[in-house]
Length: 371
Image (cartoon, rainbow, N blue to C red):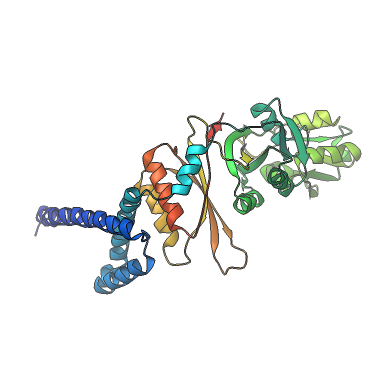
């Protein structure tokens, strides 16, 4: 038998499969009509598991592949039913009611002081707002929660040092809305009070900033010490001649420090992404990034089943983070970023179906990446 003969056989099989698939999806429509009449949920986990187990047992050496194929069919059938039933009404109403911009932008909480990178983002996005400075990320979230700050600005990831783990934990804990994001090019310098390198006995900075400058700092063989922010490190250096700070040039100048060396970061294209958090959802025009927080059933393939739905819808995932759930054995919350706009019907239908199906689901926002 030649390859062309086998391909003809495959084409013949496909010609039979497609009409059967269409018939099956038509049946899913009829199921949706009955579920709407009876008020039944779209997702029946027990029935799907029963069918998948039966198919796996019959598929022999193709058991895993058969399970994947039928799992995809089930997901597409559920998506069709969700669309017909208008699932996720609570989320739909929330999105419809969301204003385009926050009501108040008078007081904004951020990390560090006037020379911090967070403050640089604040002044770029909200130049008329009054800053409130804090030394801990948790305090920023607390102030937004209590309403003493209208918004908060927090760093979420760096291009060379990776994610700010503590921040993602707090995003999942508080489930605030993200209303904007901005990426800032980060240029670190080493600075001290006297301007004499021989006076330096320790180098202080935010731990993630020290990581971004590890190649240069390793050549100095000087002890490193963590600080709550790069700007607080500059403040420490201003009070002690033996301390040098890794900070911005702005922080160095504001604290009367002398710059010993500029651009000490590992990479020239070093950048940090910041997000703006709010208790209230707002969705600006032309929003192109969506953030979610969710968890999945603690079963084999459950996360893959969720992620594959984004692939099926042609959506580009740009970020995924996981955090263990307190009190659970190896169960996780997931944070997800992807490109899209909730006014796109395909995007909205997917979000609404996930809200109905997942054990815990939070739509964190649809916002612009501000350049």
